[in-house]
Length: 252
Ligand code: F6R
Image (cartoon, rainbow, N blue to C red; front, side):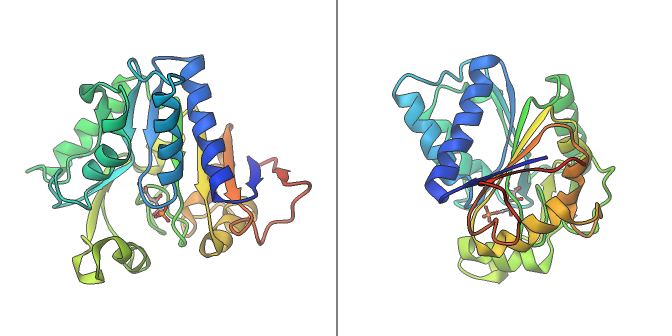
């Protein structure tokens, strides 16, 4: 696991976008795993800029988002379908039928989970997965306690996640209680992973991800067992790490 510390959120966002762009340059038909939430917004802004400057071609790329709230239709302003459309998809040349987000309104959610997982595997699984992290250590919506062997599944949001995401909905009451998420096993099959974290409220989770025991109580700690993970964090999120010149390599 490699940890790279950016001086601030803008630098972190630029580096994240450069990692995605490098992946696409190396393999134009890359399969990308994508995250939503506040943290990757700067990365999507940078990617949009690169595309507008003619430096990024997504014509052959396929994308799979990590998660979606259950019960929110695609046009709901807080659905992850809508987030992706507004912040990324509609600004770039990614063909609509190559961009995938789980359907949180599916009549049969178990069938939807299976369909989504099979689509990812049929695409050859993910080349580069972009992750955020919850203050409680969740990746995707795999909350503390989720078994590491899970593939795409339905789960209940942790009270801490509901509280954190209330900022997008106006109040905690309006935050959906359940979501569909890629499982930890799905995420761990990705060939390369970058995890982005910004701000002091992520510092403890980052420290436990890097140096703590691998435990379902801190889902991101499983990343210690993946062969190709880079944590891109800003100084605030790195506050509890002992770093050597802004970089840290941990042999797990
Ligand atoms: C979003 C996702 C979540 C977020 C995490 C951090 O698709 O999978 O794991 O990455 O909740 O969210 P922010 O970036 O809003 O702090």
